[in-house]
Length: 346
Ligand code: KG4
Ligand code: ZN
Image (cartoon, rainbow, N blue to C red; front, top):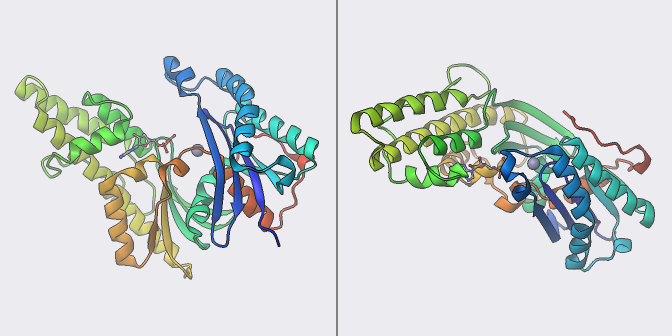
């Protein structure tokens, strides 16, 4: 049979995105992937404003879809289906995307598939690397931190996650406390490379408790206290103090992620996967020392370590098109009339 080719549409947060993806022998081929960020529109408000987001999505969706089709060189009628994020997310944006997709589907007679945004993220390692089910996934970003066993397009087992802040948030707050630029992750990583990670011993929360849950909010309190002590002693924050604080902080985050990953791997290996693999996704997965520790852990436990490229870890529509392909392959019947936008979707 001809390989499935889908248009994907994503508008659940502050990125308006469209992409065309074709199923390949292993994984998929991204024929086009357009992402238009609304970050500038929200910057002055210190967060995403739902009304502004919904309006901007409604304005940009048609253009982004047109660009994705043109860049892929595929006409709407040559597609097999359209996939759209139907939740979870900011409901105004999700509705904008679903309405756009329904219009296109009704006009062209194409089937329409509703996709869970988080399933899109979780299935990305299959798009990029053709990973086999079941694999272990660590989603670690500015908003998320959780372990999932991905066993099928619609089959996810959550092993644990953060009970408070996400690690990316902790990196960003640390940067703020130390006068470093945003986003904090890359800035803290660069400083940490000049520092001594053993000088400050920051807490490693929840390591004494069983399971894969994590906590990162206590770290910033400890960091603040250590910073103030340094400043009181030197009458300001010395360069080396700042570097050592960054290194100590990063070591603590890496240690927690590595230890909890070890436990998640043990739970995962109990399923006796044929091709054991750990995939990481999210902005924090870009961190060199964190990646190195996870890689070492995988080498030790016999897992393949995979990290999709960053542009596919952050919000995009290629992952939505791909999740649509997986859904169709699994034999789910797409029913456009029943496709509803949902703000929550566990
Ligand atoms: O996945 P992502 O781009 O978006 C959302 O979470 O929405 O993740 C962004 C987060 C930010 O908090 C940023 O500071 C963090 O990922 N990040 C990093 C690094 N690069 C980005 N954290 C640690 N080390 C890095 N090199
Ligand atoms: Zn996302």
